[in-house]
Amino acid sequence: MNPGETVRFACGDCQIVFDLCVAPPSEWAEEFEEGTEPEEIGKPILCPFCGDAELNPTHDRPTVG
Image (spheres, rainbow, N blue to C red):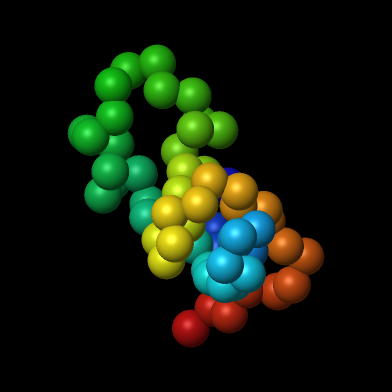
């Protein structure tokens, strides 16, 4: 994911689909240590609804509002 890009994810356990957007670097850059890989930023670790770790990006278009 790139900053400002919205991606739709689906949880493999609870089947909830949600959109995730990474804030611009000016809002989070200070929180990460130097050397943090860009691929690690914006990838959800756990489902915010059930806590499962099986999250997959979907091919549905995210809702941008």
